[in-house]
Length: 432
Image (tube, rainbow, N blue to C red; front, top):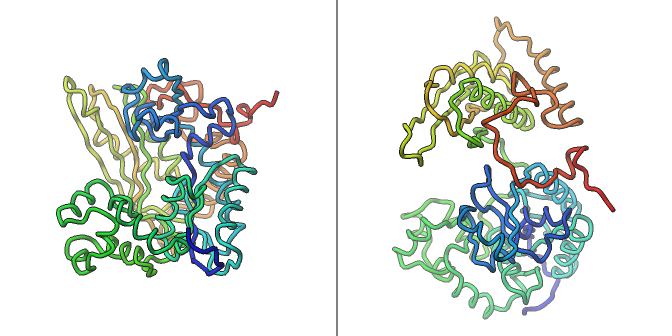
């Protein structure tokens, strides 16, 4: 390894190890040292794997039916996605990490960057402190990568998690040049932040196979064949800052909420219930971001993989008279769109809503002759959000989707979901 100097290295990336599985193990210790997978919506594909599951050769995205036999032969545990639990654990993790640095950029549910440019202590010690604190207070294992740029911090994190010699913490500037060059020469281009399978193939056509090749390819060549983001990422790979720090990410340009049905349905009323259910979630996200929506989209489709059934897919857009975050107005627009595209007699497999033409609520343009009481609307939505936050996300919803006793044929299959230990009173963990 290199020196242990206290020279500033700029940025730390903290990334949860097998995050969904790790969250499950916090509340169910019997899952430790066992092969565990977490499945996608409707228990379809593998979206998270323990190291023991990876050792069995289970790849990310594998349809569960292809590995179901391992439940009996290798004691594999399969769990439905418990997004309420994962989101809550993520919030706790990010809140805890924020105490260690003046600035934090949350990148994903289990990743964040910390600005450690003013940190004066040995950086390996800083990384081990982060790991120890998260493991002790939340039970979550993480990897820590530290570097002068986001891209090198990301690369260091990859090394910290893949190489046992680093013990979960890698400080890129503390590696010798021989070590750095050695890793760059053996790691494939797909290791670089933002390079997926398709881009990797395109790079290969230019004889760019490794990070070493990326490092030495002229930026003019990269810009002429690819987008500016890849050029910036390679610039960062060379140790020059090219990606802006986004402590407060800009508001999204659209919000999409959709899921495949647990079982296909012919019923218009069931499809409408699903639209209202998804709009409830989308509108909440809209208000949380302080945005307004001017155009509402709705889409429906049958299952394209059922060859014996008619395949149908369509969408509709509806504009609002005035931009709004009122769930009632958004629902009305979505239902108008649904009524235009719904065809009776088809088995619908998926439905979703899209909020478009989003704008900052603080810059809302008023209409002189509008009959919408914006003040009353805002008070009502605030009251609904407050009650749902206090008593559960579906305490107050709209239409028949609020009736819990209804049998929802469109609901997502969650047959293997663990309890929502931290967000539902009746599902709290029990200590014996």
